[in-house]
Image 1 (tube, protein in one colour):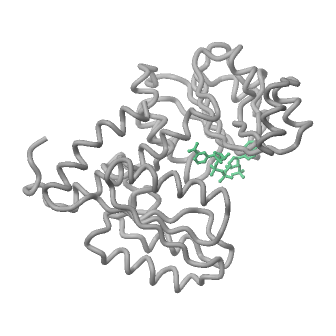
Image 2 (tube, rainbow, N blue to C red):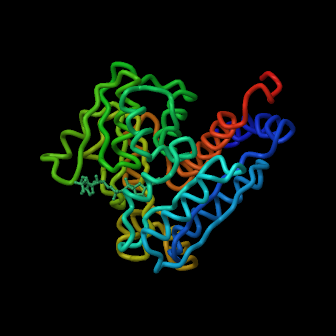
Length: 302
Ligand code: NAP
């Protein structure tokens, strides 16, 4: 699916490049967080593969809010930049909300600007946050019905849980949002014909949380290095433990990887499920932003 989404974008990138210039994405990565560096590297690589011009800006960990705002303003003014992505989390001294607010809504390819959040709430067009948008595309392409279904989203972050719940609501699901204070999470989750896990808690949703036959979307990406935990999650699998010993860690979702196979009618694995789609949707948002900014009269008809 990832390759198909990227394949569909290719002629649009070519058309923009021939008509005016390639789409441009600026990625702002503050500091040296290894996880963020991997995400940014993958995003830059996806741009290069598609012919999107990307630019990485890597200010030091010590940057102030004012300095970062000045950098964003500079990118807002640049004619050759269609999308601005600020890799989160930002260091604690930086006011993340002010920074996200400073990104021009037209260049907000993450869909995090309050104006685009409002567009999402109101069901108006605009860029949607990439991970939930990828999940909706996944459900659509696999022909999994959403309308009228009981959907349970575990996690209420601005990046995943909330936009996910809104997109499911717009698709006519009956949506319950859960979080760390939800009472009797187990039985609420078991009501879900569609269960989306986005908590960042390794393999927390075990068989008791999954309704038989549910469609389970595992957004969680947890890197675990604890051998005892890995042995418990993978039931002592020698192969998995050998991988842990070789690599030093394993990537695990928020759903128990073995239980979900037994109880779900369909599920996304970790790794290889939701993750690759997120980058594909980022590329889609960048191309769409470029198409909005480069007058369509310059483009051959599609
Ligand atoms: P986040 O901002 O930390 O939010 C986590 C949410 O889960 C919060 O709403 C929290 O509740 C809830 N939660 C935490 N522990 C819980 C518990 N024991 N029971 C019920 N709810 C609990 O995380 P995020 O940014 O949304 O990311 C969630 C996970 O998805 C992470 O593993 C992240 O790495 C992954 N992720 C993957 C992708 C991808 O492309 N695959 C993209 C983004 C994120 P409170 O609000 O009450 O604290």
